[in-house]
Image (cartoon, rainbow, N blue to C red; front, side, top):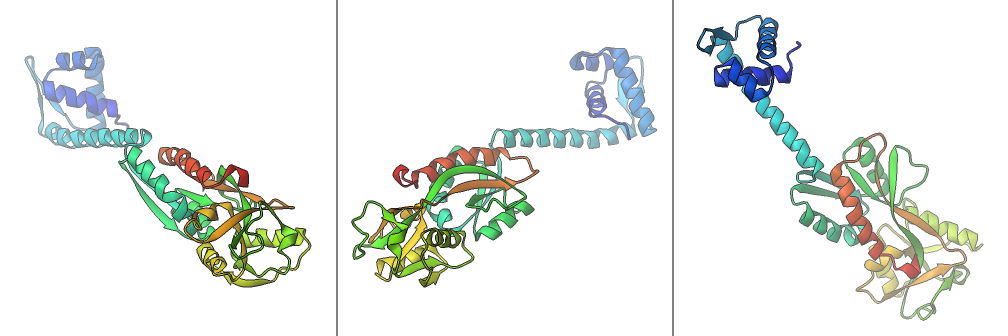
Length: 303
């Protein structure tokens, strides 16, 4: 089928005005060209659309049938174009975010609230899941973007760095480290250590720190959630090495965070999207908002 949108618009103009001359003036085209376009349309449809008289052009039965359908086609097209424009202008759409539980609770609530205030027509969905699920969701298209720390070996994703985050020591007021400005990794020897389980990227970095300080790694407690680790620290059951942004989860607990040195271990907190897929206007707009909130959670003297 070789029928064009322009031909349909020309047909509808002639049908509405009942005149080739008036339709050509409205459309800004020459009358012979308009007449030829309608003849080509009739040839393509194999029916006459108009009965032409010396005084007026009238629709045939087939023409009236085609007018009803063609009007709907143009209306749907205009609606689709308007929808795309609204997406481009961030006035309508959907944003699906995947993030680990801690970042989902301490970074995203305020970022989403500000984003929705600026773009009320965009609905936001949040999934608080593990890092592996975040990457899989982004790759498969179930999530438009993901927030977290990701291995450089992960393929199929593009990264936008939001903030650089360092590991910190978390201790309670009874700890010998409570009054220290900075703590060396070597000082952690023989301290009861509360750490995350092996499926956490944080756990791997803690093991690296102990290895670089040439100390044995013997956790006293292994837990899944950062908030659980902080609660155990507050209870005096040991120390924990956690990311700087965990300070936000510890703000209402009797726990202090101390920068770790020799070595300083840091990592990037990033916003990711799938490789090969264009970044939606909603993701682009959200990235600038969430970056600001992520940076607020990482003190400059701790990064």
